[in-house]
Image (cartoon, rainbow, N blue to C red; front, side, top):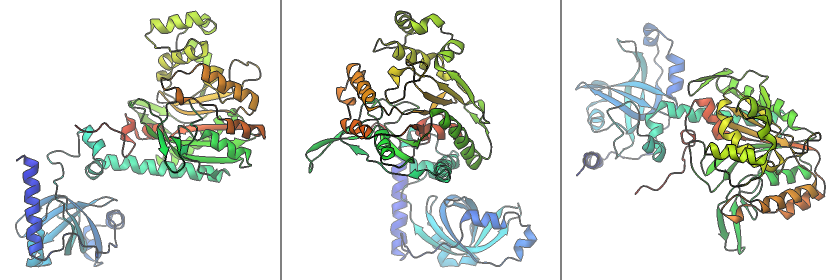
Length: 492
């Protein structure tokens, strides 16, 4: 029998002994009045002598995280969802019977505590326990011998254990929650309405990606998990909802990496009578606002790089960035064979020979990682922007931008193509030049074309990757660090 199995067996034996002592192992009658954070905020700054005059009975609960036994008295550290606090359990105070029960408890057990606050001789804020009750018996031991759970794979698979052991993990997800709430508040204050669109769609649209496919038996039809909400959100703009947003879950049946998870969170918002340039300004205001609310600063650190979010942010045209930052010869930008030759010489896989596609691959390889400070790239090729409006002065490019921070794409926005005839031509062109093995990954959405034929006002739209934004704002190296339950292979 392994060490863990032996520990589990011992805990089960203790649970059996407690049952024989008529101690409920999982009661649900204890009412918490005070959180740990509340106790610390109220009493953390008070001096020892001031605490001696405090006779308020505090009622709190939490998980035992450490035990220091001194025979007839024991110090423990316990934590709830708001923080960690020390408690002092003395046999002469709680009584022999309760202390006997307490001695059978383990690290990981959840207990209810009632007592008065004081400071020890070392000055640590401590709860002098008057009453104690077991609330949940833990049958598995928490990780020991190190501060926090270090096995990265185990942290992802058993996120609940990661949250128990690692304060940093808890802080990352608290920031994520606050970031999303701040985004919603900002957009609502700007007059945007929050809407919901289908996650199961008969035609996956709004992006070029391989979808997840399922079958609805009652309807007798195949459905797809959405790869993007874009086409449904534009239908709402057509219907008269002129400023809308959705924080959505989208799904793409593609590879996994430190920046890609099959299930991810994205913000998409649309504004009628606006251009992509309007959205760049709005994006600066949005991200600086949430940085101040969530982090309290516009100067952040990401993977060893200092990033200044103070606007205005740098702007480069797509071709300009290839030349200045990527070191690409200007002649390559107009010559498909030269571009293809350069890509091949750099070992960049190119599935299709159109110039815009090749240049985009070169950009990804030569430029993207250099965009550490917040930078807008504008003027993307039409070939890689099937839903974006052509530029009036140069029809080979679109009125589109991408935002990069920390060397990764954070946002993608553009003035929307609202010409139904050209939009259908673009869809058909995509069908001819599909890059994916799964041919069902690209469709012509005839209903969306029909909706456009009723007329969509001039509109700008944008998508922001929430997971990547949280990565940058919390200095997290992997997308799995900011998704509570990332997708993993089954354990064998």
